[in-house]
Each structure stands twice: as C-alpha cells, then as structure tokens.
Amino acid sequence: MSQSISEHLFEYCLRLGDTSLVLGHRLSEWCGHGPLLEEDIALTNIALDHIGQATSLLHYAGQLEQKGRDEDNLAYFREVGEFRNALLSEQPNGDFACTMLRQFFIDAFNFHLYNLLKESQDATLSAIAIKSHKEITYHLRHSSEWVVRLGQGTEESKRRLESAFAELWMYTGELFEMTETDENLIQAGIAFSLNEVQTKWRQSVEDTFKRAGLALPNYQDWMASGSRKGIHTEYLGYLLAEMQVLARANPDAKW
Amino acid sequence: MNSTQGHLWEVFVQSKAGQPHKHVGSVHAADHEMALQNARDVYARRNEGVSLWVVRATNIIASAPTDADAFFEPANDKIYRHPTFYVVPEGVKHL
Image 1 (cartoon, chains in turn green, orange):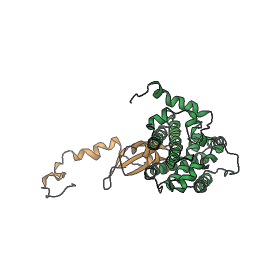
Image 2 (cartoon, rainbow over the protein chains, first blue to last red):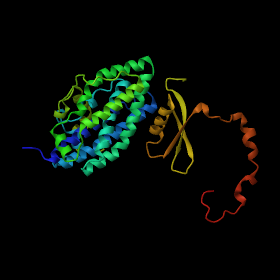
Image 3 (cartoon, rainbow over the protein chains, first blue to last red):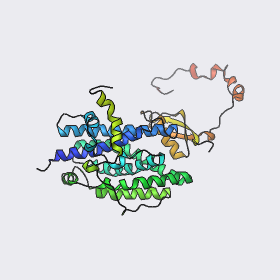
Image 4 (spheres, chains in turn green, brown):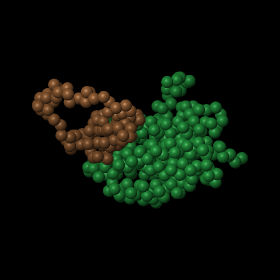
C-alpha cells in the first residue's frame, strides 16, 4: 500500500527536525568549553535556535502522525533506527575547526533548502521555514566567517580545518539524496528538488572555500549514506543515550 | 593583538530607532566582523536592540582621572547652567 501525503510529510518533518535536534545537542556540548567566552555564548545560542526549530518540526510531525506523540515523546522515546537526522549532524564535535566546518556545511544546506520551503504549499511547513530562515541566515554568516578565518589564520588553524574536511566531506553527499517521500512531496508542491539545493550549496561551499584559501572539493568522491533508512554511524547511539536518559529515567517529569 | 582572545571592542546598542546607542560592555574579537557577531550574541540575543556599534577600545579617547578637577569640578557650583529656570512649553515631550 502506498503512503499518504501526510505520512510522507511526517517522514520529511522527522528528517528536518531530527537533524536540527541532533545538531543542536552537539552544539550544546560546547557549553562551558568554548574557545573564548563570546564564542561559548554564540555556540549555545545557535544550539537553542536548532532546538527551537526541532521543537516546531517534531510537534508538527506528531500532529501529522495522529498517534498522540508530542515533540518530547518523539525526541526522547525513539530508538536510533527511528531517527532520520543527516549523518553529518551526528558526527562528534572534534576540535573547533571540525565543529565549524560541520556547521557550515549544514547551515549552507539549510539556508538554500529553507529558502525554498518558504514557498511550500503546506502552510505549517512554510511558516516554520519563514521563521527559521532568519535564524539560519545568521548561523551561515557565523560559520562561514569562521571557516574563512580558520583557513586564513595560522598554519595550525588551516591544518585543523583541512583535517576536519577530510573527516566530514564524505557525509555531505547524503544531504541531497531523494526518496519516494521527496518525489511525492515535490509533486504536491510541499517540498522541492534537492538537486536545486545542491547546485546552490556547491556554489556557497566554493565561494567560502576560495575565501578561506582551501582546495575546492571533488564532487566525485565516495559518499556515505543511510540516514534516510535509519542507518546511522556509531556516534548517534551515544548521543541519544545522553540526551534521552533523564526523560526515560523520569517519564512524565516536567522541568 | 595582545592576547589569544583578540582585540578588545566596546559595544553600543540602540534599543529602538531614534534612540541613542548606549554603551553596554565589551567583547573580544580578532576583527570587526567577528566583533559585531560576538556583540550580537553577547548583548543582543534577548531582544535588547535594533542596531549595534562596535569600536576598538584603543580608538576611544578617555579623559584621565587626573583631569577630573579641571574638567568637572567647575560645573559643581553653576546651577544656573541647568535649564530648570524655564517653563517648559506644553506638548514638548523630549527635553
């Protein structure tokens, strides 16, 4: 039996919402550990934006699903295999260069995707995109300026940025994978082709990499895949264990 | 640059259009773009303003404590310099 539009949209909201949730959690791990006070505040500030976006998207996913699950329930009581976040978002923070490059890749992706989603035929998704895009515009400015500065900074900062690239690049291809869900939602005018997002994303990456003095990436490189089907890297389980433990130890607790 | 934290920048926030920018504190940053972003995250993330200025702390010329007598003391006994002896015309709000 083929899935209905609202089932596809549920899946789509999980994909976007889980990516925001997991990335927000990763950034929150920097709290108290930032390289300088101002950056510590910036990272946690951006983390909160991501958690806010995840709250809206997972809340909506719960409504679409009609099984009585709210955003907290979806965040805290699903298992690894049920998460749809991009593999890139769950990669460990590493050093500051690694965190910033991961952030830049996702910010640039979100910037172009959410810009299209503002025009979605689904009113709720469109409203979430309009609100989020303002936040994402700032995130992209912040992360791209850091990539430039790390690339143009010292020998050490450039070396760290280049090794971050070597770690992370293979997780970027998956961002643009389209499934049956995308096809159905595109047909309904709710979602948009990720090929279009990819073209713009590559342009953003190239512009920033040139400013940073980095070698341009090779788009023929092998890319990892799996999150569309709930197959994740080894890191997501540990992240969820930490994120979910309190809610699972004290179900129905309010704070 | 005199530390690993970057230069010191003074931050001014305008609470709404038409109001003056007011000094709120300082941030560290390597250059003006990062100073502006740091100021936004440290001082404007809770809806405090609509415009930001950052100025390198070294570009601010301050009066010295030793100038205090010559600069400010003479104003103490000149109450007639305050415009409090005038009747404020009706309808004037911003004086």
